[in-house]
Length: 338
Image 1: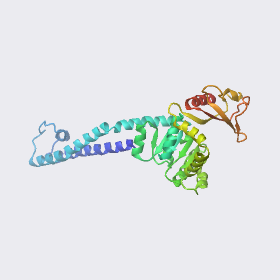
Image 2: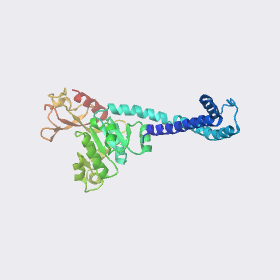
Image 3: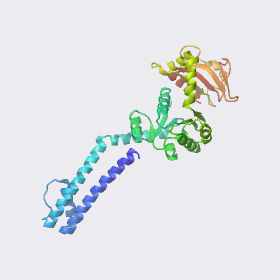
């Protein structure tokens, strides 16, 4: 349940109790004292409000007994109503609801963004990297406390079950570029991949793999790539042993505080102003410009490592580069702008 629906539920409860008290008091005075409806309603209001205006009409013994019970029950309800309203405002519920409303509108406008499903340790690393490389993303999480912490930290979050179509739609899967499936189990990740592909066949899905034997099942479910943390960990251990300088270089990029340096790729879309221009225009051999490492050719599916500067840039090429994230972001904007 979202904060908005919870607030509506609390307001509905206190409103119902207040209406019940007013109705009971009004009907009681009409039946017991034989008063006109307005006089009965007025007496009920001043009794519940404890304003002390005095009796509207003289009360009989039965009327006074009824008034005692109305005060004992009704005043408690009124006090509870006001305390609930104050808690909604003071505790920040109203502020959170309004913040969520603004966030939901922002998410609805997103296109080409990424969706991180689940908030595990791996998901935290993914979120940090996406944030550092200036990529827009939405987090899908089911735990209420985690959701509120993420919103307070400034993340765009959708609360709900990531395997459900409605939740993915609210996260903008129809217009998303990719989905990270990092849920607690392979079964959940497989179902997530199946659901996301059903809603958007073009979305790219990267799934975490928990068990060594489920890789093919995840791929058949719709995941484009499956990442096994244990396998990656093993490769890392070998690299630490046989190529420590290379690993140290890559680690230094990840730990750098002053500037964010990354290996990244820039796709060349059809209609880009760079199509047909020599690769030397973006090779970046001078200054602090991003440095071109290789070009992935869509036609052949192969990498052209350190290509000749005169090689023309083609539509569909993916430029593998290394440089500061901010400069790569600027170059990507220039190349991808049709």
